[in-house]
Image 1 (cartoon, rainbow over the protein chains, first blue to last red):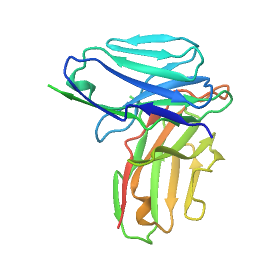
Image 2: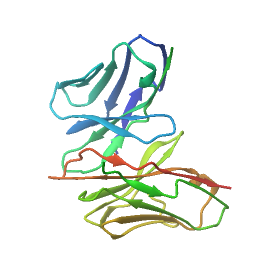
Image 3: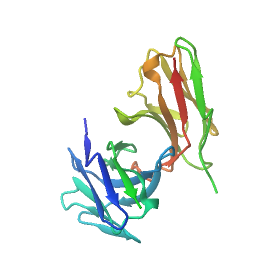
Length: 111
Length: 116
């Protein structure tokens, strides 16, 4: 079955440093979504990418979808303590209404 | 502000007992998902429903888990009998799926289950 891998599993940065998490799928995706889960919380939708090579920005967050639609990345510029949490990517396949979640990247930001 | 609700938020039970978790999806959403989250396995899809009909429950251990959606405002996940390895956080999520493509999923707060 489809697998979605995320790296790194964990990253600890100083406030103000940049952060990037990468997502790779074993199959071509129709779309990819990103979620954030705060400690003790539940996953919250951030964004969806659909087009090959698509780039979207949300303030300090930049999301990219690879040209082959098999990989994606989330980049946070100048991290803040409020960015702490686990970031998940989730891949969708054409004709299917379910998502395959990666195992997430846990981000810790020290002040 | 529409939200998915889940009850109970925490459940501690003994091995062999029945556990029932409930979820109220967001009104108007046509698809409901049940996930299990553990440190080791991450987020695993257990089952999902479209317009209350079960579409896929291949992620669930069939001998002990069952999922139902008796009406549009209630989805249930039952474990009978429960085992210590079932300890996890169980999330319900709902979404509006159109044209068969996965769209944004709205997660509930989860039920943290501990089986002793």
